[in-house]
Image (cartoon, rainbow, N blue to C red):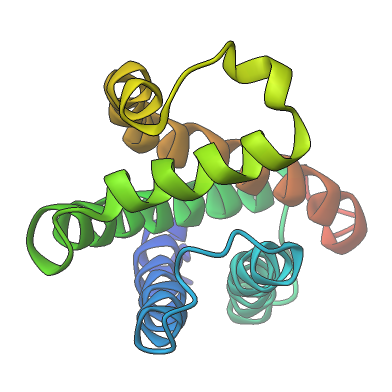
Length: 171
């Protein structure tokens, strides 16, 4: 009997989950809701990622004669999250460089007004242009943050998932 390879499941389900997440982001873009950083949007993104990981692990388990180890679950979940992060970074690069080049300026402008409303003392008498100028270098951290947090959340979720779906006789 041939060994079932986790790599196939990581690539296939990672690509499909990443495409689903980008489709959701494109839908938000067309609805002009891509600037809103609402809790519901974050929950939907997390549910899509967690669903992709869960479905991939269960598909692997089914194909592997109902056997999956905790390590295989972690590997699949973290690998899928890495692929999701790479796809998300490419989408963000395309969005911020081609589709809407002034995206970061608009995000910072919204952030300025939100901060002004909630914590005016935090701005230390900065006007909008000063705020954008001071904040713009920090926007480059968007890409490493996407990578880090996507992989971290995928790893943590797959560790928890592995506790529930691992086979009793798998290592």
